[in-house]
Amino acid sequence: MAELSIDTVGGRRQYRPGEEVVGAAAWRLDEPPRTVEVRLFWRTEGKGTRDVGVVASERFENPQATEVREFRFTLPPGPYSFSGRLVSLIWALEAVAAPGGEAARIDITVSPTGQEVHVAG
Image (cartoon, rainbow, N blue to C red):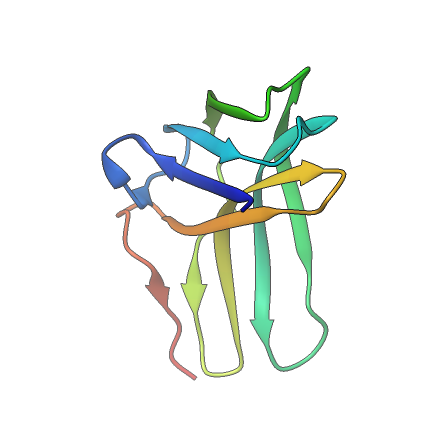
């Protein structure tokens, strides 16, 4: 059975712009994948067109079938995580194995306070 997971050190989910996100991707696959890639990105959800912005990625070359690899990203100054009546912006970390397409994702919050910004409207 194929398993892929991603997490941050200490399970941390709240960050401020400019901070470092440190964590690890772990996998147990039936065969060694060609690559495993970890991505730091944001996405919008809600009404209207959905947008995605990949801010950084790290590709692990020559991975074994079972392995744990660490990653480290520095967060940009923005955009901030926010939730509004019509649209929300969510930051996430994702690990994807290829070929096969196994994936794991966790959401994180990025703002000056470490808390999601709530937009009235």
